[in-house]
Image (cartoon, rainbow, N blue to C red; front, side, top):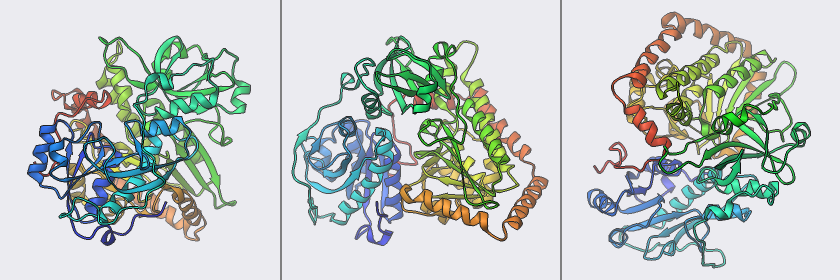
Length: 593
């Protein structure tokens, strides 16, 4: 996919744009950033009630309303007053609430994103712009939405705005459309993607789970429990050779967060599940399969694999090396589901860093995952601790923050080589500061950073941010970022010095560019001088204010967040993991309020 045009070409005049959305999700954040960078005035309103939307339009008086993510219709009182452009995650003519679900269930490789005008009939208004989308093989619904759909939507929105004139209610230029189809596709029901282990082969099992990942999950019976399945991966031939036999639907082994479940013809790794519970019970949580089904998993054999292994062998972490003798680059990827880092994952990441440090490399690339670099501590696992006898959310939070601090410290103390954080996906909260612990931080233009914590109940944050952030943006810049609570595009982050470079328009070419640059660093004639200077800087910083002092001060504030009288963090975490609907739009987003 080509890069978005530079800012002066994005629209003819600055506009007042209201983003009307169900939630401030990744697509909405991406539009928020690029629209503001293009010179538009942007405000956000959560779609809570018709009266609230009407009030927002009266207060802000937008030239245009853009709806990137809605779960219900825009009220007629609004779309008759102002042009409302709705993003539909399907090609022109596709209509209905489950566009991407159907695309993945049907195994489609070609899809699209449409910008259409809100009118009386659902998804049936005039098309202002659209973009074709290629769905890569093996994609999940959530993954396609975060990557291909989001980037196509950004391009389509700007194409629509180039055709917008405040005095008109129709586009100045109608887009060329594909052959017309008008197909209403109903909501995908649970039955349409429930798993019958005896009847469905591996390909069908994976297709059904991926079409429902990350919501609502595919229904199945697992270990005798009714649940929803997420995060599925095909088992390799080597795993099938090593794994115990079992009937279709039987869990026969474990690895990391996942259970290996026999299918009709092979087996799949199920990484996360949400157990069905009675309506009177607390809302079910999506958890690692080995945690949600801990009793059943405890008796299963573990099929571990090395960090360096064949490409078809799944695990959360992978390590590779590139380059010639004496100029080698290590590449450590950690594909943690939704970017969350649990105690277990933090321990594994530390072990992987220790392994990488023993290898004869000059540069270590921390590649994170394709969808997220990291999003910090694992809030779902912390919430689960609140429901567990003998544990608490406060205790689990304390263990998690210390575990991720240990990972950040391990990165900071890699003083015998150069380290690069390669942000293939978004990063938030503590995950941002894991990246900033590296010597160099590179990203591509589609990446978003949320280097703040306060949206999670005024959380203070740790991960040595009080040391890392001022080094890059200064004390005043650090305060502004942490108080502002707004997403930052990679382009903006590079401009302010938060990261060291924005290398590519999107993820497709980013990894190759990172490897090329990392190999150049490893082959540089002054590599030894760079490493020596790095070690000296670390010594000087330690003498000025030890890392242990930063950590102690941060954790003192975190202890009050977890155990103090103010329950804001616990309330915010509970609302987040249980997807509680918003009661109002935060004022830092709704500038019209």
